[in-house]
Image (cartoon, rainbow, N blue to C red; front, side, top):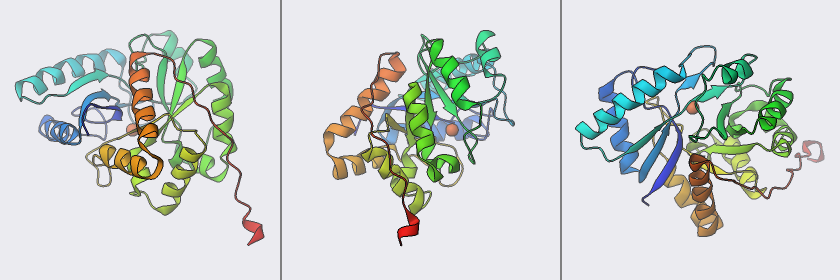
Length: 256
Ligand SMILES: [Fe+2]
């Protein structure tokens, strides 16, 4: 598979937990290309309590990395982005022009929640983002315990106009059966816009994007794979994406 777009990865050197240095980043970039990816949005963590990566710093580093890729003959087109953790200062950071979006025009924001829950204030804040013309793309909702326990929390965010990006390795099964099964539920319910790698150098965070799309094609047919890839393309180009989704019924464990 060639021509894939990856909307979420941590391969910039020395900026977060993705890659410690340029040698590792170039090695990761070669793996990206080997996995069939031609375009990658580079999304270092931002405002997640551990990493602050200001817009200006990311822009400079991506420019440098572009030159390093070219100097090493690695045919990967990269774009500057951020994986932004939802936080009380997000609207201020947006007003201060310190946020990078998935697209140049600022329509799509790769937005992360803490892994254990959906914060109380999330819906209100997301409502305000949507009012400003910003569509949050919720990254890896399948790995959020609050959403896995209660999928209606994600449905509420979709109702507000959010999109979702599933981590490829979740679908492939790297994070265990429960997360893989929940990913399938989300796919069946039409609640997924696309896959992305979320690649780090960490164990379990290798490139699985083409494997995930191959599995999707085998289980659900090529139309859905084409649709996800078209959605990824639309997101990076700032074009409209519509999801035709259904609610997920909560499992009634007490019947067993
Ligand atoms: Fe990430």
